[in-house]
Image (cartoon, rainbow, N blue to C red):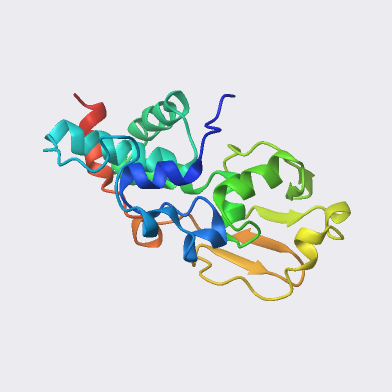
Length: 206
């Protein structure tokens, strides 16, 4: 599937806030948003009045960029969320949160979603004992995600001797065993990304 291969920092600047796409760099003085807090391009510093449609579009773009998705896949997730019982916007975020690449990131096995996606694609993880190298794989309650035995000796995972920080309460992690378990589905309160999901629903409902 196609994916964005341009500069990650450009996406953060376009949204006017940190999307934490580059891991530790986002917390350092090298962060592009800290240095240039305006949109990229020659007209980036110009003042623009944003319409309601523009606000809705920006929220959708922001959500796509947080999770590293392109339009077709994001739209398919929205259609799936729309068919589920409950609030469509919250259903959408729950689906996005339970993608395997995001779960790996949430468990602290990747410094960013982009790195987590790469680690999954390279086959470093198993789900319930079976190798899964599809980042979009949706996990379920009770699933155990573990670093593959052959990958434990790699430099990336040798460094993980301490418990991960900021792990959400819908997963439990054992850094010593390099594994984590999904103990519940995330609620809206568990999802800390600054997204106004109702604007996304309004945009697709036009």
